[in-house]
Each structure stands twice: as structure tokens, then as C-alpha cells.
Length: 145
Image 1 (spheres, helix red, strand yellow):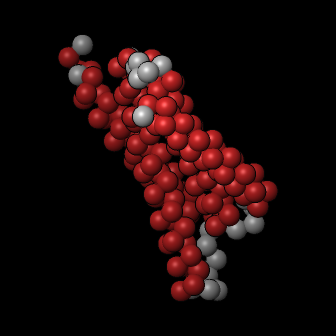
Image 2: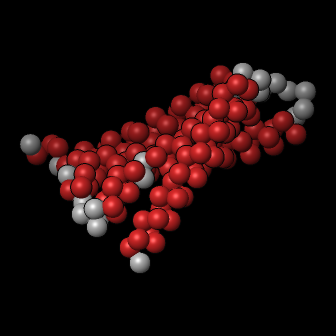
């Protein structure tokens, strides 16, 4: 059973990295054409990071579920924050693709500014980081030190 879990996890990680890596290369060339190409580049980059963040899990699975780096509280917390941020950002970027496509269909002559889209994405990322930092500080009981 353990071998199958390890094998499937490693296979899916490699497929995810290859697929997202090729998509990043494709959209990197097209990133300046439209806002949508830039959004696709961002979502494939975030998804590549989400897939690659599984390497510590693979290390733990290959060591018969010995915690390896997950034995450290700080790493566990940071890993959870990065994983959560990536998942939320991936969902948000998919939503942004839908919203920008809808706006392009509803108002065809209107030009969608890249800077406005980037500002919205940066604002959401900043909000996620602030929330995670606040949760991290309260979990570590920072103020009592």
C-alpha cells in the first residue's frame, strides 16, 4: 500500500511539473499580448509552485513517513501558509480569468487595463499575506515573549 501511495504521488508530481512547466514556457512568450495570457502565466506559475511544494511530502513518504523536515514546527507552519496561499491564489486567478473574460464579452470596445488587473491581484495577495501573518503571530503567541 505504501509503495502505491508513494508511486502515485511521485507520478502525479512529475506530471504536474511537466504540464505546468510547458504551460509556463508557452505563456511566457505570449505574456505581453493580452491580459488573459498574463493571467494564464500567473496561474500556471502558482500551480507549478503548488505541485513542487509536495517535495517535502515525497521525502517523508520515501522515509516511511518519518517526519523529516515536518518535525520542525516553524517549517510546518511556513509550509502550511505557503500551501494555503498558493491554493487561494490559484482559485482567485481562475476567478479573475472568468471576470476579465466576462467583461470583455459584455463591453467589447472597452480596454481592460493590465495595471488595474495587476493591482487587484497584488491587493488580494497582500490581504492573504496579512491574514496569514496575523494568524502566525497569534499562534506563536508572539506578544507574550
